[in-house]
Image (cartoon, rainbow, N blue to C red; front, side, top):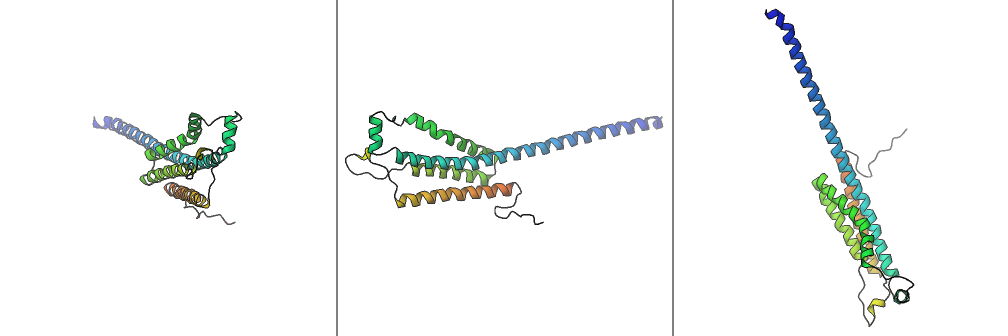
Length: 197
């Protein structure tokens, strides 16, 4: 009687083994897909922060130009005569936030999805962008009876400090790019090999 059941037991064992193997392969495939999806989300967050930080720096530069152009007696007279409308703080806020919201969203995604080193660099990048805005909106000390109508001018010290802050942001972005490349398994910046053929 045992000889009759031998093929049935063997077939049942083979079926169970096949089912377990198929489940294992499916689980492993889904696991690899999840890892790839996490890497893609992380890389997208890193890229978004890298790109948004340079846009925020350009916005800070535009703030400086705006402050210099929209200051002085000529600007005051134009506003007074209705040739130009007065700068609205809420419109200004909306204008500034168009580029600041993406910086903070990207930094938040890096902090949630990225490595501890990437999270630390993202905080430094956001702070450096804020430093640029702070420096761009700084006003020189005023003296005299009409400081509000005085034309804003930038001196060599201001320009040297501005260049220092821009270079600092550039260095942080370079460190961030190098970290991203190393986490992605790419060669560090400047070490890309060009095929010779």
